[in-house]
Length: 161
Image 1: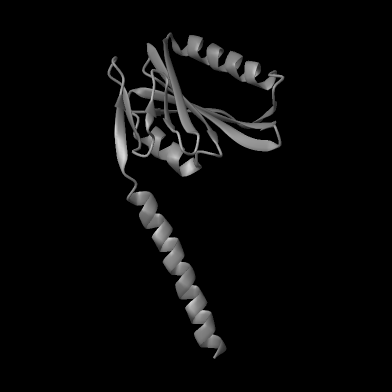
Image 2: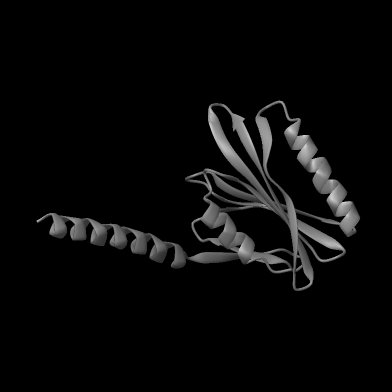
């Protein structure tokens, strides 16, 4: 009897896990295309589209973006100043969780970092990813919780310069 019960529990857990994976893979996506040509895909449930954000109004999940121009050195200096600005912010207790990393993919350099932000009784991870083509850059950033890490990675992975 114990073996049957154990088997049922294991099968139930596999069903839940496989069901969750299937839901993530079957996520319906829409495309944001900026006037300068870069684009990314985001969950179709995001119903508010602005000049610098996409948002799911029912949950508050928001992806913000901005772009700029400059050399690698100028972008790296800007990233350092942004991190310092966020770490010194008085409205929340922010700390570095994942330092800046960079990698080259095709013709792009991709920079990433994560801060932890504590404020108003909540803790969020502030994720930032910058794509640099040598002359122009685009930053995508969000707070993990309410947005999930998987949703953010889906968006980042779909980015096209």
